[in-house]
Length: 209
Ligand code: ADP
Ligand code: ADP
Ligand code: ZN
Image 1 (cartoon, rainbow, N blue to C red):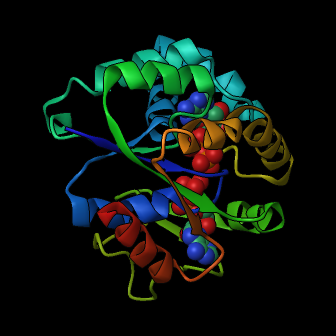
Image 2 (image 1 turned 120 degrees about the vertical axis):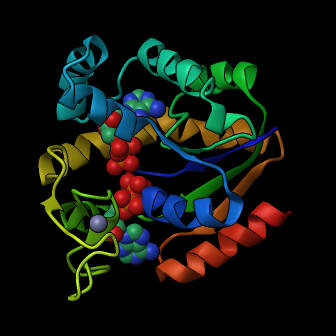
């Protein structure tokens, strides 16, 4: 059993690529951001604690995240590994992960900071099926979403102010992980400032290595 990590700044396209790669690999997508948003919505103790950090664009404490992952990995669909999206984001999270499951590939989607604000401020999703779209770069088809219905949903933290804190958190706390994984020989850099399909093709090639 081995898992894949999708790594990159907020708005790099991790979720978009996860939707596609999960079809090719059969590995379920595990997004800590999605899990936290579900917890916030349901007002669970985890959600109540995480909300303030998320609204401020700060990372949620490692202990909360590691507990979520420990539980998630026990579900039956994770038996052959999973595709992590937005986890790990700190060195302590990566250390904890190395004791929980084997990671075969870390796919780093690289996008320059100056592109990130436009990506995030134009992001919306289908409230019915969760597919991610973009006002300009990847709009919902005029015929509607592939799930058959469509309700536009926006994230509370997808605004100009919070993006700056999220980018700062990425550079300070998450980007040091690149070196950590590079030294383990499983780090693959992908140019994420291109057309969505070309990126998916390169990711599949990297996963075959
Ligand atoms: P992440 O999961 O890394 O935060 P998303 O997959 O949600 O990123 O993508 C952020 C936004 O950018 C979304 O609105 C998405 O539709 C759009 N997007 C994703 N990949 C690309 C790309 N290659 N080019 C332009 N826009 C993209
Ligand atoms: P994006 O890919 O756009 O940064 P996510 O959905 O991955 O957004 O994360 C949204 C927010 O949830 C983050 O800004 C952070 O507050 C919290 N979060 C998600 N994953 C983690 C993690 N692994 N560690 C700490 N905080 C996290
Ligand atoms: Zn839909």
